[in-house]
Structure formats: C-alpha cells, structure tokens
Amino acid sequence: GAVVSQHPSWVICKSGTSVKIECRSLDFQATTMFWYRQFPKQSLMLMATSNEGSKATYEQGVEKDKFLINHASLTLSTLTVTSAHPEDSSFYICSAHRQGRETQYFGPGTRLLVL
Amino acid sequence: QQQVKQSPQSLIVQKGGISIINCAYENTAFDYFPWYQQFPGKGPALLIAIRPDVSEKKEGRFTISFNKSAKQFSLHIMDSQPGDSATYFCAATLEGFQKLVFGTGTRLLVSP
Image 1: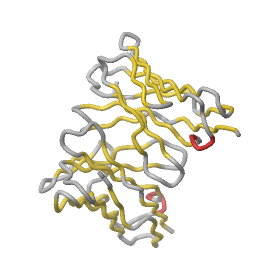
Image 2 (image 1 turned 180 degrees about the horizontal axis):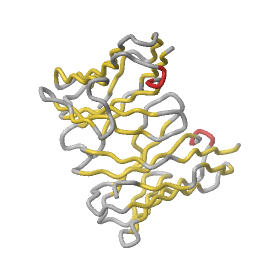
Image 3 (image 1 turned 120 degrees about the vertical axis):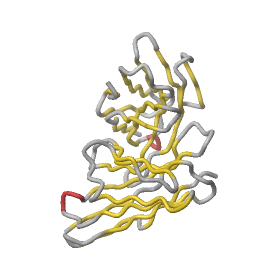
Image 4 (image 1 turned 90 degrees about the vertical axis):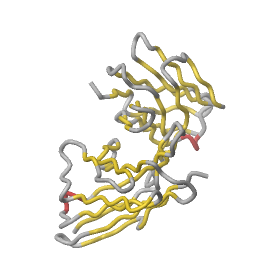
C-alpha cells in the first residue's frame, strides 16, 4: 500500500508553453502533498506544501505565479509550470503524507525538458 | 540552521563490505531522522528512520546510529551488495514528517 503516482513520467515542451504534472495517492488519502525539484546529481529541494482545499505554501525563492499548485482532492495535486523556460528543466517529484505515518511517500518523478 | 550536512559525497565499497554514511545537523527541533535510497530516474524510498530519543535502530542489513549530544547520525549498510548501488540521502523532519530537510546525498557504488 501507500503508492504515489505521477503523470507524465517525462515531458518535452517548447519554451513559453505551460506544463501540468499530476500527483496522485492511489490507495490512501493524503493530508498533505509536497512538491520537490531535483537537479542532476543534487539533492531534493522542497518547492511547496499543499493541503486539500487550501492555498499552497511556497518555500522562499520559489515563484508561486510560475509554479501553480492545485490540490483538488485528498488524492490529487497538480503542479503547473507556466511559461516554461530551459532553466526550468529538472526532475520534479511529489510526495504525500498520510496522517499518523512516519514518512512521506514519494512518487516516481517527472522529468521536464524545456527546449 | 535547517541544513543537514552529509558525507562523503561518493563512496566505493567492495561487495560484502560495510558502507558508512555520516550526517550532522544543528536544529534541535528536528523530530525524526530518516534515510532514503534513490535509484537513477526514480523517486526516493524510505529505508529506515529513527527518533532522537533512540541511539540505534537496525532493520536487516541497515543500521542507524544516532548521537544526540554530537548532533550526528550515520547509516551503516552491512554486507553491501551491488544492488545497494544508489544515492542515499539522510534527512531530518519537522512536525512529524510535515517538512523534510534533505542532506546533499551520497552516491554509493558497490563493486562486485
């Protein structure tokens, strides 16, 4: 149990377009979902935390107008990268926290390449 | 103060040997110290976690040693196998996994 999926697993887009990434908790309800970004050979950096039905909390330095997060239900969160540019190319990973569990469950990640 | 420092950056161990990765922290408000394993192109997966009131936790070949006074903790992988070759991240949490702060990662290569 406790599976988190992401879709798509990889995406290539042109500079200036918007890209939406979905994160779903498949077999549990997630009280909180998180979005991370990971550059090659680097650590995971938290971008934002979201709770169902409320606005996301963004980490310092993360542009909330560029990285739109919608947490529509207890099993779905989406990250939209608006007007993507080559520097937004990265590995985006979501995770979900299940109340009472001592971990975050991570998705498989989405690789974004902006040309 | 919310940083977690991790060393070494990379590690090569022979099959059957012991892999040791070290981490240090400053913030005494951290309430769990997990270790994650990540394979290339995949999301990280929890290996083992420890609370700060416990000095050691063992699960199979993986052991966390925790030194609260020194604000340090380490992961020991006994009988290391080629399948253990991955990147390992230590982390520290606030508010019971509501916020995860990751270390910089250690790339482990276990040679056959």
